[in-house]
Image (spheres, rainbow, N blue to C red):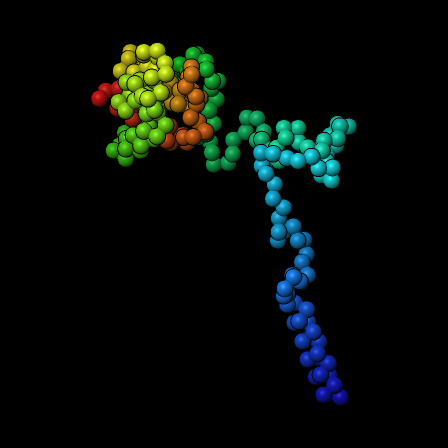
Amino acid sequence: MKLNKSIWLVSCMVFGLSACVSSGDDPGVEYAPDMYVSKGYEPYSQLADEDRSVTYDGVKYAINKDGKNMREPVAGTVARGKDDYYFPYKAQDAVEKTKAGVEMKNPLTLTRENLDAGRRLYNINCLPCHGEKGLGNGLVSAKYPPNYIPSYKSQRITSMEDGSLYYSIALGWNLMGGYGKVLNPTERWQVVHYVNYLEKN
Protein backbone atom coordinates (compact mmCIF):
# COMPACT_ATOMS: atom_id res chain seq x y z
CA MET A 1 0.00 0.00 0.00
CA LYS A 2 2.84 2.34 0.95
CA LEU A 3 4.60 1.43 -2.31
CA ASN A 4 1.51 2.38 -4.36
CA LYS A 5 1.28 5.71 -2.60
CA SER A 6 4.96 6.36 -3.23
CA ILE A 7 4.63 5.51 -6.94
CA TRP A 8 1.56 7.70 -7.23
CA LEU A 9 3.32 10.60 -5.47
CA VAL A 10 6.45 10.31 -7.64
CA SER A 11 4.30 10.12 -10.78
CA CYS A 12 2.46 13.29 -9.80
CA MET A 13 5.75 15.10 -9.13
CA VAL A 14 7.25 14.03 -12.47
CA PHE A 15 4.11 15.03 -14.35
CA GLY A 16 3.93 18.35 -12.51
CA LEU A 17 7.56 19.22 -13.23
CA SER A 18 7.30 18.20 -16.89
CA ALA A 19 4.28 20.47 -17.31
CA CYS A 20 6.39 23.46 -16.21
CA VAL A 21 9.11 22.89 -18.80
CA SER A 22 8.93 24.72 -22.12
CA SER A 23 10.81 23.68 -25.24
CA GLY A 24 10.93 24.44 -28.91
CA ASP A 25 7.88 26.28 -30.18
CA ASP A 26 5.88 25.55 -27.03
CA PRO A 27 6.39 28.40 -24.52
CA GLY A 28 4.35 26.63 -21.88
CA VAL A 29 1.41 28.32 -20.20
CA GLU A 30 1.49 32.13 -20.17
CA TYR A 31 -0.93 34.27 -18.24
CA ALA A 32 -1.46 37.80 -19.65
CA PRO A 33 1.01 37.32 -22.53
CA ASP A 34 0.89 41.06 -23.37
CA MET A 35 2.91 41.60 -20.22
CA TYR A 36 5.67 39.32 -21.52
CA VAL A 37 5.65 40.39 -25.15
CA SER A 38 4.23 43.89 -25.33
CA LYS A 39 2.84 45.30 -28.54
CA GLY A 40 4.99 48.06 -29.94
CA TYR A 41 3.36 51.36 -30.82
CA GLU A 42 4.93 54.32 -32.54
CA PRO A 43 4.54 57.33 -30.19
CA TYR A 44 4.12 59.96 -32.92
CA SER A 45 1.88 58.03 -35.29
CA GLN A 46 -1.19 55.87 -35.06
CA LEU A 47 -2.98 53.55 -37.45
CA ALA A 48 -6.76 53.47 -37.57
CA ASP A 49 -7.87 50.49 -35.51
CA GLU A 50 -11.54 49.59 -35.15
CA ASP A 51 -10.78 47.16 -32.31
CA ARG A 52 -9.31 49.94 -30.23
CA SER A 53 -11.73 52.65 -31.31
CA VAL A 54 -13.07 55.07 -28.72
CA THR A 55 -16.46 56.74 -28.65
CA TYR A 56 -16.46 60.22 -27.13
CA ASP A 57 -19.47 62.55 -27.03
CA GLY A 58 -21.27 60.28 -29.48
CA VAL A 59 -18.43 60.39 -32.02
CA LYS A 60 -16.44 57.25 -32.76
CA TYR A 61 -12.69 57.71 -33.15
CA ALA A 62 -10.70 54.89 -34.75
CA ILE A 63 -7.63 57.08 -34.29
CA ASN A 64 -6.68 59.70 -31.73
CA LYS A 65 -7.64 63.26 -32.64
CA ASP A 66 -4.02 64.37 -32.98
CA GLY A 67 -2.98 61.19 -34.81
CA LYS A 68 -0.50 60.15 -32.10
CA ASN A 69 -0.45 57.25 -29.68
CA MET A 70 1.28 59.28 -27.02
CA ARG A 71 -0.67 61.86 -25.08
CA GLU A 72 0.33 65.49 -24.69
CA PRO A 73 0.63 66.72 -21.11
CA VAL A 74 -2.32 68.70 -19.79
CA ALA A 75 -1.80 72.41 -20.50
CA GLY A 76 -0.15 74.26 -17.63
CA THR A 77 1.10 71.14 -15.86
CA VAL A 78 4.72 70.52 -14.87
CA ALA A 79 6.17 67.06 -14.41
CA ARG A 80 7.19 66.15 -10.87
CA GLY A 81 10.79 67.15 -10.20
CA LYS A 82 10.84 69.53 -13.19
CA ASP A 83 9.74 72.76 -11.48
CA ASP A 84 12.67 74.67 -12.98
CA TYR A 85 11.32 73.92 -16.47
CA TYR A 86 8.22 76.02 -15.79
CA PHE A 87 8.57 79.20 -17.84
CA PRO A 88 5.51 81.47 -17.60
CA TYR A 89 6.51 84.00 -20.28
CA LYS A 90 5.00 84.35 -23.76
CA ALA A 91 7.29 83.96 -26.77
CA GLN A 92 8.22 86.83 -29.09
CA ASP A 93 6.88 89.50 -26.72
CA ALA A 94 9.14 92.47 -25.88
CA VAL A 95 7.24 93.25 -22.66
CA GLU A 96 7.52 89.64 -21.51
CA LYS A 97 11.23 89.59 -22.37
CA THR A 98 11.84 92.73 -20.28
CA LYS A 99 9.74 91.28 -17.48
CA ALA A 100 11.87 88.11 -17.50
CA GLY A 101 14.96 90.31 -17.27
CA VAL A 102 13.64 91.96 -14.13
CA GLU A 103 12.24 88.85 -12.45
CA MET A 104 14.85 86.19 -13.27
CA LYS A 105 18.35 86.08 -11.82
CA ASN A 106 21.06 83.59 -12.70
CA PRO A 107 21.04 81.01 -9.87
CA LEU A 108 24.44 79.60 -10.91
CA THR A 109 27.62 80.98 -9.43
CA LEU A 110 30.17 82.12 -11.99
CA THR A 111 32.77 79.36 -11.70
CA ARG A 112 35.33 77.95 -14.12
CA GLU A 113 33.23 74.78 -14.36
CA ASN A 114 30.04 76.67 -15.32
CA LEU A 115 31.93 78.91 -17.74
CA ASP A 116 33.58 75.93 -19.46
CA ALA A 117 30.22 74.17 -19.71
CA GLY A 118 28.70 77.35 -21.16
CA ARG A 119 31.52 77.59 -23.72
CA ARG A 120 31.01 73.98 -24.81
CA LEU A 121 27.24 74.46 -25.21
CA TYR A 122 27.73 77.80 -26.96
CA ASN A 123 30.12 76.23 -29.47
CA ILE A 124 27.57 73.52 -30.25
CA ASN A 125 24.40 75.62 -30.46
CA CYS A 126 25.27 79.30 -30.91
CA LEU A 127 28.59 79.54 -32.75
CA PRO A 128 27.22 78.80 -36.25
CA CYS A 129 25.25 82.08 -36.19
CA HIS A 130 26.89 84.27 -33.55
CA GLY A 131 30.51 83.35 -34.29
CA GLU A 132 33.32 82.16 -32.04
CA LYS A 133 33.69 85.49 -30.26
CA GLY A 134 30.01 86.48 -30.37
CA LEU A 135 30.48 89.12 -33.07
CA GLY A 136 27.54 87.91 -35.15
CA ASN A 137 29.87 86.64 -37.88
CA GLY A 138 29.28 82.88 -37.81
CA LEU A 139 29.04 80.90 -41.05
CA VAL A 140 25.26 81.33 -41.14
CA SER A 141 25.63 85.14 -41.05
CA ALA A 142 26.94 85.07 -44.64
CA LYS A 143 23.35 84.45 -45.79
CA TYR A 144 22.09 87.68 -44.20
CA PRO A 145 22.82 91.41 -44.57
CA PRO A 146 25.74 92.80 -42.48
CA ASN A 147 24.99 93.19 -38.75
CA TYR A 148 21.72 91.25 -39.14
CA ILE A 149 22.89 88.88 -36.40
CA PRO A 150 23.83 91.18 -33.51
CA SER A 151 27.27 91.33 -31.94
CA TYR A 152 27.41 90.64 -28.22
CA LYS A 153 29.39 93.86 -27.94
CA SER A 154 26.50 95.96 -29.26
CA GLN A 155 24.71 98.21 -26.77
CA ARG A 156 21.47 96.29 -27.23
CA ILE A 157 23.06 93.07 -25.97
CA THR A 158 25.40 94.50 -23.30
CA SER A 159 22.47 96.29 -21.66
CA MET A 160 20.32 93.15 -21.60
CA GLU A 161 19.68 91.56 -18.19
CA ASP A 162 20.51 87.89 -17.58
CA GLY A 163 16.81 86.99 -17.42
CA SER A 164 16.24 88.50 -20.86
CA LEU A 165 19.18 86.53 -22.27
CA TYR A 166 17.70 83.39 -20.71
CA TYR A 167 14.32 84.27 -22.27
CA SER A 168 15.93 84.58 -25.72
CA ILE A 169 17.74 81.26 -25.32
CA ALA A 170 14.66 79.41 -24.05
CA LEU A 171 12.00 80.84 -26.39
CA GLY A 172 13.99 82.44 -29.20
CA TRP A 173 13.86 85.99 -30.50
CA ASN A 174 13.11 87.32 -33.99
CA LEU A 175 14.46 84.74 -36.46
CA MET A 176 16.42 82.87 -33.79
CA GLY A 177 14.56 79.76 -32.72
CA GLY A 178 14.20 78.77 -29.09
CA TYR A 179 16.61 76.27 -27.54
CA GLY A 180 14.32 75.36 -24.65
CA LYS A 181 13.90 71.84 -26.01
CA VAL A 182 17.64 71.40 -26.51
CA LEU A 183 19.11 72.95 -23.36
CA ASN A 184 17.84 72.26 -19.87
CA PRO A 185 17.50 75.22 -17.44
CA THR A 186 20.96 74.72 -15.92
CA GLU A 187 22.58 74.62 -19.37
CA ARG A 188 20.74 77.80 -20.42
CA TRP A 189 22.13 79.67 -17.42
CA GLN A 190 25.62 78.35 -18.21
CA VAL A 191 25.30 79.75 -21.74
CA VAL A 192 24.18 83.09 -20.23
CA HIS A 193 27.43 83.14 -18.21
CA TYR A 194 29.45 82.52 -21.37
CA VAL A 195 27.57 85.18 -23.35
CA ASN A 196 28.35 87.67 -20.56
CA TYR A 197 31.99 86.58 -20.77
CA LEU A 198 32.06 87.23 -24.53
CA GLU A 199 30.48 90.66 -24.02
CA LYS A 200 33.43 91.72 -21.89
CA ASN A 201 36.29 89.84 -23.57
